[in-house]
Amino acid sequence: MEYQNLLLAESNGIFRITFNREKALNALNGQTMKELFHLFSVFLPNQPSLKGVILTGAGEKAFVAGADIKEFLAIEPGKGAEMAQRGHDVFQIIENFHVPVVAAINGFALGGGCELAMACHLRIASENARFGQPEINLGIIPGYGGTQRLIQYIGKTRAMELMLTGDFFTAEEALKWGLLNKVVPMADLLTTAETLLIRIAEKAPVAVSAVIASVNAYFNKPGNGFLEEVNQFGRTTQTNDFTEGANAFIEKRQPKFTGN
Image 1 (cartoon, rainbow, N blue to C red):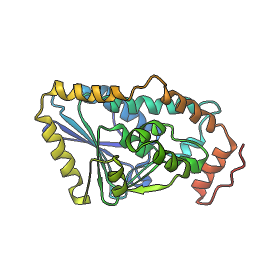
Image 2 (cartoon, rainbow, N blue to C red):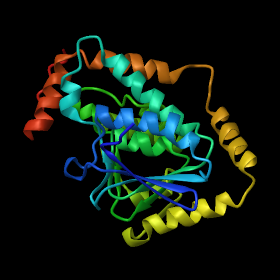
Image 3 (cartoon, rainbow, N blue to C red):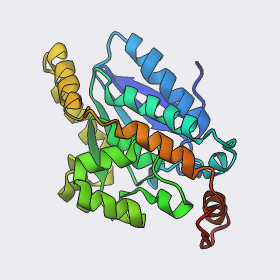
Image 4 (cartoon, rainbow, N blue to C red):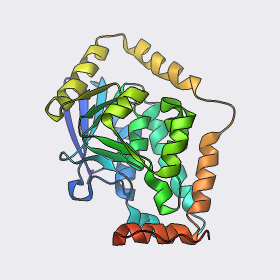
């Protein structure tokens, strides 16, 4: 597969993947999601030198500043849950990948970008990074695992407030709350991520993979919150409030929700 929105570079078994939609603040669109799925399910597993993966965004403004809202507006009636499930499928492959995946967060990580970062095994952010799950402002909810993973990292009380208000939070807050491993100057971001992966690459590969699988297993609770999120996301995409919220976002105005 030829990648249009991802740039790949490799050094000593560490693959750096850059989201290359800088003018769109690296927002996730359908093409990017297809490329991510192929990257983690086909391309990377067949790289014999693979030791670790870094995900980062082009430029210094954004890691991934959410999803492509215009594509959201084009969702066919009743197809919202399918869209959310595709996102879950991609992010779960990343979360369960057999070598460490580090998110090097260089700016905004909002909505789907925050969800993507949380699907990675480790997260390092630049000092200017900003996080949030602001989907509530569009009349929908996080649809790529956000309602489940944010709770795991920062606790139910704080996660509930952030998802109900749509408020952003800083890199320092994310570090203090347990979402991040490190916060570093922008100039040191990629070097710090690479150094961490080099350290891990010195360990036994089978043991590294076993740690990832075992830690992830802790969060596989009997109640399927991810499926509930998929269904609820699909429900919200069928509302007039979602259409209003998305259009207001594109038109840079405050939405007027009606409860329908």
